[in-house]
Length: 169
Image (cartoon, rainbow, N blue to C red):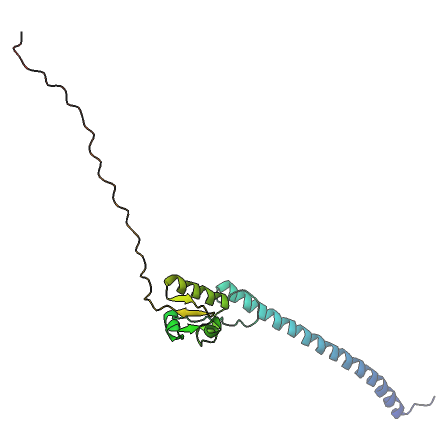
């Protein structure tokens, strides 16, 4: 029987090993993808755990994960100052153009005008708009105290009739 040449068997083996090697590489790539996917899941679970732990300890407030914006509050307006800065005759449009008062809604400005009218420092202008009253503002009325009711006179009690004392018999 003739012997096969050694080179042929090595070539056969390399061909078979090459196929096996490719299959092993595919399995390894699949495992690598699976590991990466699981690591992402673990990272997400760790983040969720940390968030829950903060909530449990009272450090964070529950709510959406978005960034919360601070709400800007308007500063309090000194309406006496605004009134003094207005011209003698003005309109609502003038008031809306005021640097401080103009930031307020029109409904608020109407309420302020109404208050000034009640206080007597402002009056309607015949030409339209408003005018500053020349008279001093009316002083605020003090609440009147109720006068105390007159004291009642005590009810008269009839005294028993005086009987003349005479000789007793």
